Amino acid sequence: AMGVNPFAYCSNLTEIVVAADHPTLAVAGGALYSKADSRLVCFPSGSRQREYQIPGDIAIIGESAFAGCETLLAVTIPESVETIGENAFYGCQGLVGLSIPPRVTAIPDGAFYGCEGLTGMTIPPSVVSIGAYAFGECEGLTGVVIPQSVTSIGEKAFTGCEKLTGITLPQGIPAIPDHLFDGCEALIAVTIPAGVTSIGDEMFSGCSALTSIGIPAGVTSFGYSVFDGCAALTSINIPANVTSI
Image 1 (tube, rainbow, N blue to C red):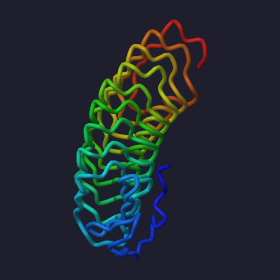
Image 2: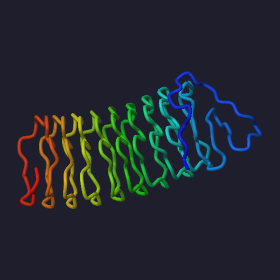
Image 3: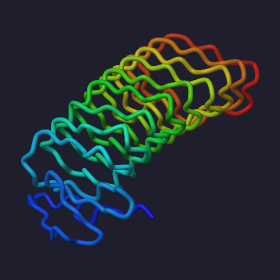
């Protein structure tokens, strides 16, 4: 099983030391690794390193591995990485440079939550799911490319992305989750795919710049307060199939 970083948010932890001949653990570049599953366990959140390059034989970035590493500016993830754990980069406020490698299939819950320094993110076509809060409170994120391979997006995945201006959702998602763009006050345009049948609670709550939105004909239900606070919205077409609003 993929373990959780036992030292997450230890903000004064600057160094981890293990014996060179330790049977199961190793330290490389200041980070702690598990040999058994090629997993990065912990990058110490008190480290003053600004850049870090994950070794090329690592398969897993563990749960909360970089959580709270506020001074990190750039992390290089090798193509060997297949799995990113939940909350892996949670609260990495200074992170401005990061690319997701092409073998990763899921961006899990909270993976980049609170990464205020990220301005853009390209998600590779290997990814099929984006978890809840995955990019929540990424206040500097202006653009994100979601590939058509994605068939599942969790609630609040982009909540609080204050500078996000536009986004195209993939064709394969059947429903819009709750609070997806809650608080995205710069959001002007969103393309909702034709296959969507339901729109979740408070999807556009607080999207004060949203001027218009096309609702696909297949939508049959709206959640509550979907457009709460959309002060710029001047017109909307409600499809004939809507039976719950």
